[in-house]
Length: 59
Length: 242
Image (tube, rainbow over all chains, first blue to last red; front, side, top):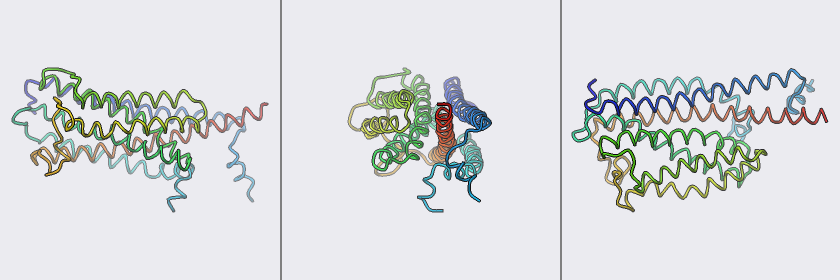
């Protein structure tokens, strides 16, 4: 594919778009891992939400 | 399952987990199709190959605006019905909308330098999109400033609805003022002015980017529901310790 004399601008634009999308995906994935780890830690200390406790009490 | 049942954050979280892999797959396929279509698109007789920047610039602009419209609809849900899922939807959309608006500004600048001879000009379209980006940052800052999620949601909802006035200004700025930015060429009365050989890849990219936005938004909403769950648990822990 010949991008002509402005290839740097075209490649730069696509690289910027890719970097932004990659950053968004990384932010979401890493934040989910972090939150799940924290929730697991809190649950290990015996803390559960009221709704979950109600679920456990059901016969 | 009814819509009202889906509005429960826990049910929504479970549903999102089932839907997300399919959405991610559809997004990937849509980008492969759009990428092939864009690579085969001919150069423009005036812009040359730089027209390829439009295939990412236009969808980024569309999603920057769409995210604010979505946040405004969610803001109504927050203020009128005080629904927690509306708060979650608005909060999750803000950083994604900001990212696509930034993408729009960057790709627009990189197109403007070779075509207009400048990276930036203070014309009405560019300035109103820059204001949109700054408003996104303001809403994100507001969410982070107020600790109580319900109070933060109400404050952010008011700011979002006030900021909605900028959306028609962005759309019609090229008609109301004399701008260097070109007028509407896709959505306009009388039909698109873009040749079909470039319109098809552009529409394919619009579809792919929209799938990407929906996927990212659902995933970010799922994270926000987890964050609220964690906050509740931490408060219970603090209560138990007291």
